[in-house]
Length: 431
Ligand SMILES: Nc1nc2c(c(=O)[nH]1)N[C@H]1C(S)=C(S)[C@@H](COP(=O)(O)O)O[C@H]1N2
Ligand SMILES: [Mo]
Image (cartoon, rainbow, N blue to C red; front, side):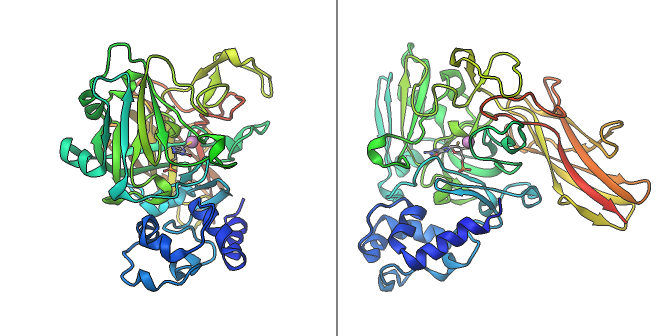
């Protein structure tokens, strides 16, 4: 599961078949003239990827890769991520690289279900609000900025499949370990303000979110993913239609120029490359909304058991969870005491306590826990942990939320491999 094979593949591909590499990286099918591309939408995208405007972009020859993008083992604009898949691109962050209070854009995981849109030009981006509304609207980024209050918030985004790799028997889907979670600072307008301005009708039941990405098997195959939330959740004032991530335009792979952030619920509700929010009189039925996608059986089942589709329920809020971000696992120390820290979060309410164990859960000690900087931000915690003598230890962490719910030692198996919030463990060697 190392990052290198797939990324090396991408770089080798750039040397051998640049058109195909462009298509993989940017989601383009035909690509006759790089210069034409760079003058238009791609210029902004390429600028975002290299991290600056490109003054002499007109001189860039066709199929020429900026050297900033060509280094082996690097996803443009990302740093240290583990690539699980490059078609669609899925990459997670090792826990020790999530140590910052606010997750750097370079460290924010990537979960694509299809191919990235071809045209990411922010100046021409349009968002439609329609369906059961009195005033359907089409808004550009400037309209959003001009008409609605702009807010900035630190918000946790976590894939519902985070932790799937630890299920036994294995379940289908990306084998995320710990790092499909982040808490970046997002700037945008409230989804609720925009929906209110559109005049939601009383029959409204559910939203449907649409993005500009395309299905892996071609545009005619429909959308890769289109999910939604009940109106009550949609009207939570913490949801954002975001146009900035950590004070800059949103990274193209994180859904720039415009995306939803629906904190507390599965990351899949937070549509990237957002083009349309439709208001419906019933639960949405878009791709990955129906069947067994992002759903759990409504009863306890045996590992590997086959469950009838009718027994599945849509996953709503995410569970309480915590992460040790320092030190990295397999830490070696000659000191008797180690400063341990990390984050804790929950989909609904807040985290009330974080406890640590160094004796496989026999005894627990409380960590010092900070308040969240705002609702739906993760909370930082820290503790000085002392070890009685030389040897192998595990540090375990367990968060408890304001509903009195704690992280389990292991969670019951489910067919989709969702919501694994088992305690995080790291190994420490005292020498
Ligand atoms: N348009 C679109 N939006 C999307 C996705 C996608 O593939 N396409 N993936 C979803 C999933 S499953 C997750 S977990 C989050 C991941 O956001 P990130 O890639 O910015 O980390 O985006 C969600 N929004
Ligand atoms: Mo996800």
